[in-house]
Image (cartoon, rainbow, N blue to C red; front, side, top):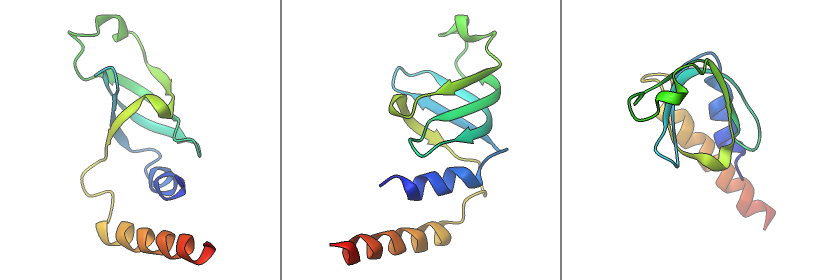
Length: 99
């Protein structure tokens, strides 16, 4: 079910992303890895709203559980919308064929 998103995020390894968590914490960092459960590992981490989360100022790398993620902001120009639409159509066709 998440394989489409997983493949999109795998292409972004080494790029800078911002991940907003469900507790409103926004973490900016370099995407180091992502797994099939959409857990993320970030390096070179900075907190976007550091004044609200001063205890996070010293964190330089982190592991983020996929179930805690609200949004992932992708780098501008790194994702081709046409490729994503084609991939989505392919996934839907596979699901329909399996039924």
